[in-house]
Length: 135
Image (tube, rainbow, N blue to C red):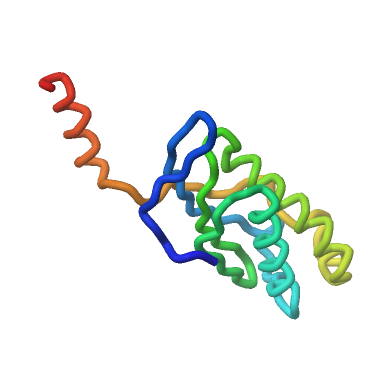
């Protein structure tokens, strides 16, 4: 995982800094991310971020939920990254850890929490925008 930086990234069309805190849970918030499934999930998430060219800043797997801090190209979208991670990890973890198949009909809930992080405080940005009319 990389060190948290205040650098901007770019693609062909956009200069950006889009960092997200994402949290999601196993179905019924069961504490099933244990006994090696937690370690394997971290590997799968790291691989997915590399594949999709997203910067993994921080990651923690708890028995009943996952915390992810990641920077994603806004033209790719955080929803596509999460959909990819949840789909791939569900498929691989359920194949590798039989207890996940027997305890849950599906590994993940459909929902997740996401919040943008970093950058200037909201008040500073509001003031900057308000002051633009006087420039």
